[in-house]
Image (cartoon, rainbow, N blue to C red; front, side, top):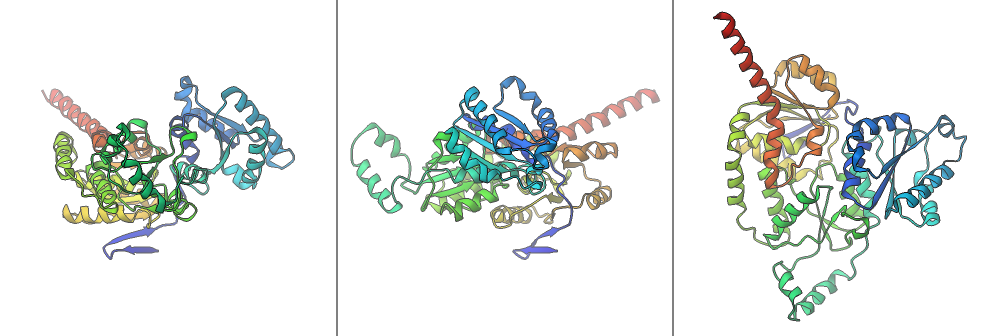
Length: 458
């Protein structure tokens, strides 16, 4: 089965299962982003072992998450799940006093049809703390889609705008009529509707994107998620929203259909080219003429010259794991790399339409063929293609890295791009640092082998 996009870009679909990192790992970055939250993962001991191993490095940070382990009696529906969760949540409230408790459903809760959504409102009323339910099971979702389900659930709790859209402009005009310090601060921004950005980024990266938009007179009204649950942005009719990550299609759909927001379909701010296109799209929607972006992008490319010399002409193969593959491939093609294939576990072609269009335009401008895009790739077929193509680098999930390395293929874990700071102009260098590390290691090994051979010949 295949779907054609703009007659030149084709997305194929194979029948493979998700071979990705578990989506419950979204807890590791979300609990740090939402500072007054607490995450309760409801699952079996296997889920607990995964969290302990995957997030054990953060033990000294006193993380705000816990595991509600289901025993055999719970799974066979012989015990009272509600009372057990109630006891845990009361203890969490007493020990941590969070502003919100987020229940993360796992594969087990899905299989036994555990009614978390039915229990949460009753318990929320009893203990007096908001309880959100997010499904992050590996049966239905790929690695980073765990964050997507959390943000979609959180969007329902965002307050509505204080004033209707029609009245907001009149109120702002009256407010600006009074001379004050606040007027001088707000006068730097263009008079445009509210803009809310969605996607979990480190605070310093979010501040960088806020500053980039401020330079264009665009004001960011808020982020979903906010640093504190109590500071969630207002959402509703007339509010514009724009995503920063390609795996947030469920959140985008929720914001459009349930919250009646206007979605700005833009490429994602990964790499200088993507960041520029993202800013330009937002400016165009608000009728603001973007200033100085071309020169700023050129300066960033110039600063990356040492890395570009390393990757130019090298080939890369994406096996598919974190749903960042299309954006990363587009950036690497712009850097001069050859992308053989873009494997991706799931892709919402409507939400990623602008990114796919930028990928196509980038390939045309770089005079290279548009790479093959494979949704739900079959790993056996991919391994066969990798053996034939012999790429210089394979960006893959952790499960396949060592077997590929044993067969002479340099690899990079895709999960590292998820945890690294890769958004915005300032972080383009970090993306290339991750990409070139295995290439530099391979080059050093080859140089060492040649040196050893010369010494033996002498």
